[in-house]
Length: 478
Figure 1 (spheres, rainbow, N blue to C red):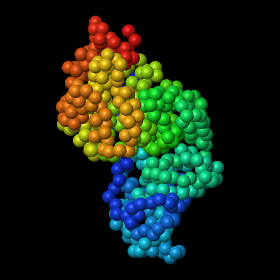
Figure 2: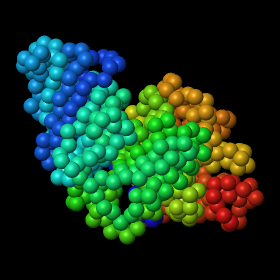
Figure 3: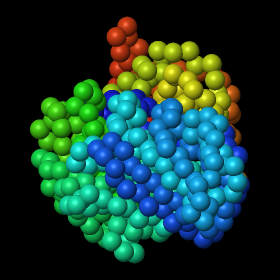
Figure 4: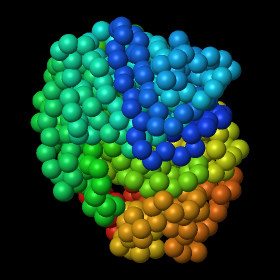
């Protein structure tokens, strides 16, 4: 379990996707009426797509990069256009960029979606013989926002979705870039209402766990985050569980949260006897993304918060839900600190968020998590255990600030509740000051020993009454 936590809270490859759009010029700048889209399975690795427009257009641009997955536009082939059944000339300007000789009413093309790099599995569409994941964000042009999508599947295949079908395999999609479909021969599901939210598990193939047990595990995490944020998800949530599309990957699992859907890919060859405890810990991170950033809608690059702070809040959730003990909580922080110490911290968190996908450094995750820890401990110390970081999440959602303003501005303002917390945000988020846990944590009752191999965190002996009160508010039992 500890190994899982260390991988979960330090490896950026398992975390939330942020769509990075390629430059495009499109004649369709606004769309209110859904366009008609038909997606057909052509082979075990390719899909054919036909789009009928409401208004003619002459330029088409596909995303070329998503969450570090590059060259997606190169998968688009055989692009054709028609206007009143007459073919229109098409020029390919670049990978994923097409220009028609005149405005056209319909287009068709083929997308090759054979599984690519293991690091991209959770972030892009892929297809195999008996199952696949279709992500409209990399299958449709960027101009297509609202769509009436019909899936033409092989005989015996079914589809899982966070949306209700208005006909067999037919869906109305309001935000195409956020919609994901799980397709396959052997899909099965379980669903229930949790805190007034519709929640469903859709799994592909047979596993060593029961769908209802997985739903119960996810339900406990969802209930915890409703209490933490004071906010219920408007669209509920759907969790896809599917086999990783390659047996060669050394990873045990990969995941992404997009829109109202969590896509979790598991390695069938992983040497794990009991997946349920593992899934519980994974859910603490991935399900929080249904709230942050997916239910906020704030603008700008504030990855330090929705990634780094999420790592810490998920770790605390695992502690509160008794998925881990306090000793493992401290060990995981030590592992994150070791990762942080392994590279030069020469950026503010604001700067690191802007270069997240072009940098090999994991500072957004590591430093973001450590700043969240310091912030939480500071609030607890100032309030004698009566306030914590969780209160700031409730304020963020309760103040109805979602969708208003720049994410960095809104969140930093939310965090600045006292002169001491303002020092934290200015020093470690807005500025480049380096974190030194061995100097900062002892005042909270935690000793830090930085060794040549790894860092050890331990509760101080003896604790002052104030330190014991603070750590007990966090989950320390002695």
